[in-house]
Length: 331
Ligand code: B12
Image (cartoon, rainbow, N blue to C red; front, top):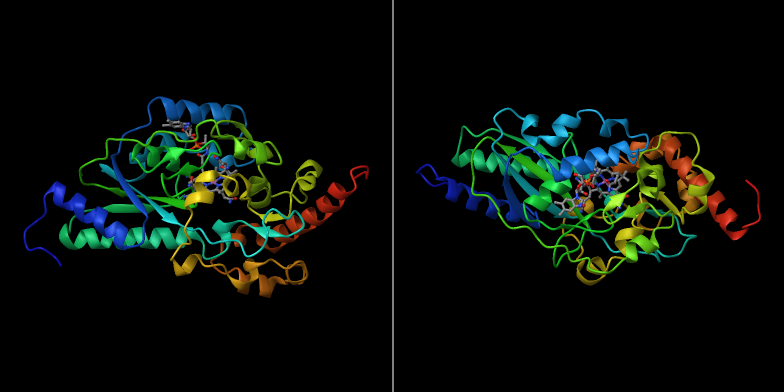
């Protein structure tokens, strides 16, 4: 119902929070749009100076924007941070190195469409009660540091595996933001880190990509090699440890006790696995031609590698499997 009187800041904030939850976001937090002056900015610069971004050159460009989220929309005063559940249970044994595997985040429709559209709905709803309000919906769609923002907004803590973990929910969540040019009531408290002495993610990573707590070196991360890397073939040391992952990797989240204990299947229809991703079949995937690839992966994250990238990853997983089974074999 739309109230006839203009809403004050507190009422607007309450409406935003409630509507965000009604739209299917699992958690919402709101922060003032301020630059990352110290801590996070320094960490990002250190990460880049160590070359941990590998060939993701886009992580280096627009650094000043990443450090100041308000620069992404003129007049930004507030940032609404949201998390949306994408968890769907595996329909095969994900610890079986022989099975070909597609990361959970990529089994349904690309979150860039889903989360962004939902944030636009949130904005539209806000504009019905506050017509002049301007906003911009983002989900990994601009140079922005989503995890540090979500931490500030009290959504969760930086897991040792480099993913934001939500208390009582786990880490199978996409992050998104709505930049707004109005002031709101802000969340002041952050969630303490609950990883404790656990180091299951660090120990489970087959390529030792988690180089310190919460810090992932993309040069060693299967997710980077199978999604972002553009070269013709994957390096042998990656191939050998690929464990069947052909698009993304979930190992460091699969072993996380917070996920094992708390993950609940998402109710979002768009994130339900497409048939081809349910139990990836080697023969079916190898047989894909351009038309079939386009058909199966329309609006899917998997489109990012194009068909030749997916084929490269499958070939690499199959070869790596043989190498892993025959340690003496030369490449
Ligand atoms: C680059 C990138 C990658 C790279 C690098 C991964 C990484 N961990 O940084 C690669 C390609 C490897 C990757 C892989 C994946 N990614 Co990615 N990725 C990104 C991206 C575009 C930028 C992240 C970034 O800036 N990294 C650089 C480092 C330095 O930044 P940072 O991790 O944010 O680090 C800061 C914090 O660590 C902070 N910090 C550290 N400790 C502490 C402690 C405290 C107290 C505080 C306050 C801050 C703090 O300081 C750092 C600098 O500011 C974001 C989207 C975005 N725009 O933010 C998605 C994003 C992080 N990815 C996401 C996902 C889903 C994945 C995968 C799970 C996909 C998959 N299944 O294959 C994997 C997970 C791999 C892993 N273990 O991290 C989600 C994560 C959601 C979540 N719950 O955290 C994001 C947020 C996209 C989204 N909108 O949902 N990704």
